[in-house]
Length: 252
Length: 321
Image (tube, each protein chain N blue to C red):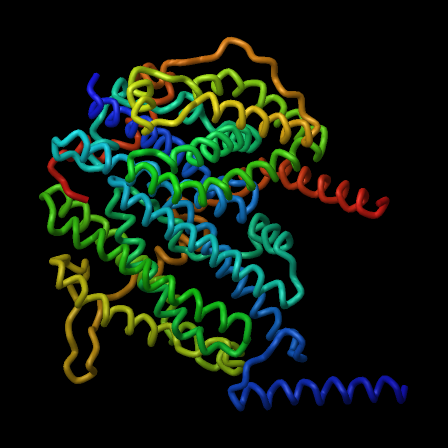
């Protein structure tokens, strides 16, 4: 793998994470428990689409084959997507979506804090902008985890169940691969050990304050960075890519 | 007895004050004395307006996950968010009249409160997203521009703000339509098909003809309503026909003709049977829209209860500090 290929892959991983998570959050439109929450969740989705655009455009540039952000979002198949499995998991109930948002936003907050010092100036700039956004995502998710954890018996039970069920998808967030190893040597990629330590500490703090039990580490699911996904991704892509695939000549 | 007479006199004077303000064209504010009929009329109209914004999120939301480009998805999401924001804004404005959002939602679910008929039509293809933005929001703007001068202050101020965002929505819809008309045969077909299906329901958004809905009603007297249904409908037709011509869309009305003497377009007869049938529950999506709103509301009950319980626990803790 060359440095260029590694950087391309790295941008796809980051771009796909934003794209697929934004897809799931956008499904909350007109489905949230209160109108204010409908607006909040779709607002985060909007932030993530913006981030996906920036990262996929940059990926296209690095690849040098003239592919746009839309080409990469709408014309790749299941095995060519590299997002974490956590992002493609169905929304489930509100507690499940919030647990996913907490795990992801805390991860992204520490991840992009490191990435803003990347030797790659474009990635550093995207990271600096992203931190401002994910800070809000994290604050929002934290507030809700506290409310649900320490709210009613039902909400406590639901958020604990969500945390337990999603836990096995959190290990993958900190995985390294051939691309990250190449880029870390060049001070482009982030040191995942640093991100993991900070993430763990923050998640433990929030869950404990929310009167929840921190799950014990168990078998962790993996596969995203190899393009091996859950069955859910194929359905996301078939819906998301429908018009582009059905009318390949059309410009929208 | 004397006290009662005195109270009656004060009431009378306050109401007189209301009429003077209305005549002068001053805004009525939440603390001003107003006739019960005025308050009731506004609650009905404003809550219907708020519900329309919220129910309108459903047909557009239907296309979010299938938006054909990242930009299109971003714009559509932002637009639907605006609609939700308008809903919030209007619920708050209506709350100044002494009704809560919970009560308004309960009235929507019981069928006592209505929402705009237009959202009982389905959004079938991507071009429908264009048609909704261009025609439906375009018609709504004409009505809302007029409502900027409505007599109730909070409603009128809400309209000023909402109009700014709605004009962006209309441009968004028009952009989708014009892009599709410049595109492939399939895209052009989709755009014309959406135009054919949304044109007449959009004209119906302004309500029955003035001859069926007389000028003399309280809404005019109280300056809640500032222009008649037919005046607004005509304004909408006049500006939209030209926009359609520019991008090559045909208006599905064989009787449509420019009337030089009047300086307006003449349009063919509107199918009011369809209008009343959809209002009466016979639209393609009436049941679906309400069932969805009720289901989501009920499913969210545990979340709202949890937030309330958490808040109460927090307040208790603060008291014991």
